[in-house]
Length: 71
Image (cartoon, rainbow, N blue to C red; front, top):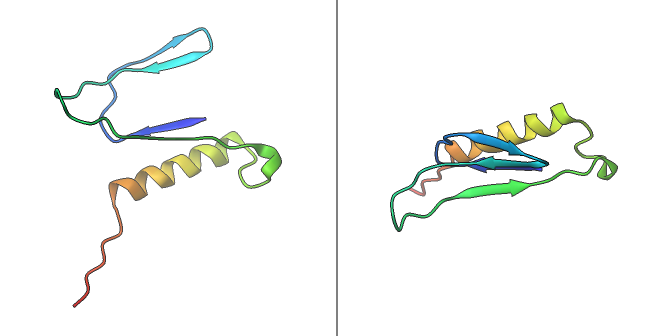
């Protein structure tokens, strides 16, 4: 499993089997995040390094969205 936050994360705490991310946002402001998971038996992402590479690629795409101008 993985999670990508668009806002900066403060701390990540580990409690048992859970990772808890804390972040601050202004009142009435949305918190935007993306979650996903991979299963090695699907034979698409078959290792932890492939998964982290995928998450890094998606994060870069979210930070630099495709812009199309019609002239």
